[in-house]
Every structure is written in C-alpha cells, then in structure tokens.
Length: 423
Image (cartoon, rainbow, N blue to C red):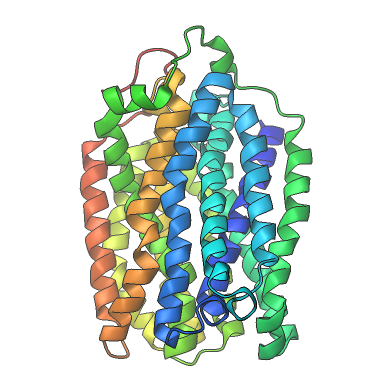
C-alpha cells in the first residue's frame, strides 16, 4: 500500500501540475499574449474562458477513460491519460502568441486546453480506484487520500516554478519566454510519472469481475443517473472554492489591489502546503466517523467562511490574505480528503471507474469551469471588497450541502463487487 499510494500521489501531482500551471498563466500572462485586441479585463476573462474549457472536457475524459478502466483495467488508464496531459501541456509552452500567428493562437490554445482536460478527467478515476480497491476497508479513506494530496503537490510545483521565474526575470522577459518554462518542464515530469507507474499491479477488484458491461456509461446513466448528478452538485462547492482562491485571487490581487505577483503566489502556496499536510489527518477522521459527516462539515464551513475570506483578501495585507485563503482551503480539504474513498463505495465494480470519475469531474464543470469568470465579472461590478463573489460562493456551498444531505453514508463497508451500494 505505501508503494501504491506513493505512485498514485506522484502521478496525480504531475497531471495536476499540468492543469494548474495553465490556470496560473491564465491569471498572470495569457490574456495579453493570446487576446491582445481585448481590454485588460476582457483579455483576462477570455483567458479564464480557455481555462474553463479544461473543466468541460473532464467529464468527457472521465467517460472515455472510464470505459477503458471498466473494460480493460485501471492500470492502462493511468498511462494513457498521463501521456495525453503531458504532451498537450508541453505543446502549450511551444505555442506562438497572437502577434505571430494571429487568430490561430487562441484557437490552438483552446484545443490544447481541451486535451489537457480530457487527460485529467481520466486520471482521477484510474489513480483513485487503483488505490481504493487495494486498500483494507477500515483504512480506505486514509490510503485513498494520497491521490488527493497529489493536486496540492502539483499546485505547489507549478506555482513554485512560476514564483521563481517571476522573481528572477523582468516583466518583459517573463512575458516573452519565462512563462513557457513550466509548460516545457511537464515533459520531464510525465516521463518520471510513467516510470513510477510501470511497476503497478492491476486492481484485485477489477480482476474479480467476470461479466464486464459493454458500454459502462450507458449503464451509469440508466441506473445511477441521479447519483452522478448528486455527486457532481455535491462537489461543486469544493471546486468553486479551490479555484477562486488559487486562480481568481491571483488576478484580483495583482490587477485590482496592486499586490505583487511574488507575494500573492507565496500566500497561496503556503496555504496549499498546510492544507496538503492536514489531508491525511482528516482522512483518518473520515475512516472513524464516516464520509458524509466530513463532507457536510466541510460544506457548512465553506458557506460560513466565504464573506470573511473575501474581506481578508480585500485588505491586501499578506498575512490576512493568507489566513483568508487558508480557512477556505481547510474547509475544502475537510470534504475532499474522503471523496476518493466515498465515490468508489457508491458504485458496483463493473461501472465504478466510469461512475465515480464522471461524478467527480462533473463537479468541476458545475463549480470550477465558470467560477473564475463569474468571480472576475462580479469583482469588477463591486467596490474594493467584492461581496458579490462571497455571495456567489456561499450559494454554491449551500447547493452542495443539500446534495451531500441526499447522499447515503457508506462507511465502513467492503467495496461492492456486483450489487451497488445505492440506487
């Protein structure tokens, strides 16, 4: 289990590095380079729109790779999704700007972002299921949380590289070539991930299946459609909160408040590190007290913290901004520390890769795709303190709270091989 958890963590860290480095670049530099004919605000919105395309692609990737995972095994999903995400990320780093190739630049940017999302949509299901289906029931949340730590590691890697380049280069150098370096680094990281995953064994639960479903997505829609929609709605708050504080806040603080890029990246990265360190502890609580109570507590905390968080961000003071971001990320971690155990427990093994992955990535569409765009627009309409952003996030958190309330508890039960845990 330690070797498997480490390989899953490393793989998700690499794939989410690819995904997050785009989000940071969208907040800091992609607007002027790929949408120069727009105003600064419209350019940022357009860059965030390409950012959102990755979320729209994720459920499609979950369906495509989920089909592969339910038909051929969890292990092949990890390899193919990693290759797709890594190759498309490197290609973004090689893409000429609008000034060189004209309108083809934003079009190609859109296509590559879509391919990134496609690969990431498949990654989560394979990595989580390979860990969850090996883990003993009484420690499933703990072992399954390590793929969930991966996104935080990927975020710190992506923003650490951006921070180092931002501090070392002038504004002109960063805009001309510096922002490309993190994208190029994705190639080396992808090769490392492939090496780490080469020795993994197939999931025992998958090997037990003797009646594979021909089209898992059809089976999921027909018999688990309500469950998929509820899980997508339940996870929306986590996505909305995470991408508000890690993507939108960068643009808001640097453009509206005049906070330096280095200071803001440092605040966000420090909060993400603390969050990542506490995820295993929260997962242990999930094994002891249940998945659903942790999710309900996290959603409630999100709803209560959004207005204080926005007020702290608006001060422009680094310590207060850090505390506002940290509070939001701890509420997020309370939910997402147990999700990797919770979602697989809701589905039978024959359609688990498709059902869990589609539900998880649907939450990204509901909560992550539009949030930076909506938050940017709402902040522009308000004064120094964007209360509209806080109201929007509180509303999403309350919606997710209602969805979690309608989901069943699953702990502690063995993963069902044939019969689903819920209808």
